[in-house]
Image 1 (tube, helix red, strand yellow):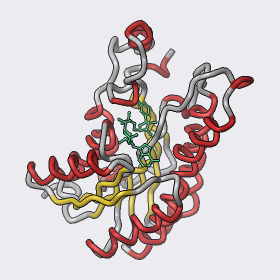
Image 2: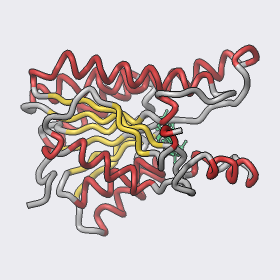
Image 3: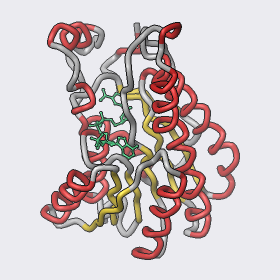
Image 4: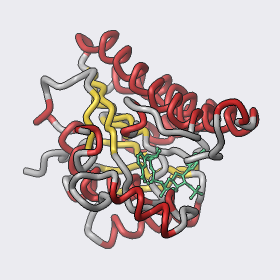
Length: 249
Ligand code: NAP
C-alpha cells in the first residue's frame, strides 16, 4: 500500500517549484491533493500533471495572505473529500533585497504577510479540520534562513525564523491531539524563485553549499513526504534542514 493512501492533503503555492513537486509526490503516494496557488494557470497545470500520472487532485485558488482565502480553501477541501489530514504550507516569496536600515516598509509588510502571516492563517483553519478528521501532519516550508541570517533579506529571514517558532508552538499545543507539525529548511533550490539572480550571484550561491551544487525541488519533496507520513510518527516540533551541508559551516 502507498504511504499516503486515501489521505487528503493541501499544498499551498503548488503551481511552481517545490510546492508542485510536493503535490506530485503526495499524489504518487496515494493522497488526494488539493492544489492551491494564487496563480490559476500554473495551479491547474499541476493538477493536470497529477491526473496524467494517475493521481487525484483539484485546484483551489488561494492567496495565502488572505485569511478568508485560507478558510475557503479548507472548506473546499472538506466539501470535496470530507476530511483533511496533511497540509504543506509552502507558498512564499523572496521579497526585496536591501539592508535593514533601508528596507522598504511596504516590502517588509508584504513578505511578512505572505511568508509568516500566510502560514498562520493556513494552520488557523487547517487545525480544526484536522482535529475533526482524527489528526494530521503539518509541514511548514521554512528555509535555512529560518536558523541563520542572510544580509539584505531581513524580512525573509525574520519571517522564516518566525515560522520555525510557530511550528514549535503547534507541536506543543496539539501533540496529544494527534497533530504533528514540523518545519523544513531548504538551502538554495533550483526554482523560479531564484529567476532574478544574475549568473555571478548564482555561482557564488552554489559555492556556499559544501555538496557543490544547489538542490532540486524533488529532494525537498522527499523530506516533506517523510514528515507528512506515518513513518515520522514520533517526529514533531522539529526543524529539518535539507541543505547540501549549508548549515554545517
Ligand atoms: P516558486 O517556484 O516561486 O513557487 C512559489 C509558488 O507560490 C508560486 O507558484 C507563486 O505564485 C506562489 N505564491 C506566491 N505568493 C503567493 C501567495 N500570496 N499565495 C499563494 N501562492 C503564492 O518558489 P519555490 O522556490 O518553490 O518556493 C517555495 C517555498 O520554498 C517558499 O516558501 C520559499 O520561501 C521556500 N524556499 C525556497 C528556496 C529556494 O531556493 N527556491 C529555499 C528555501 C526555501 P507566483 O509564481 O504567481 O508568484
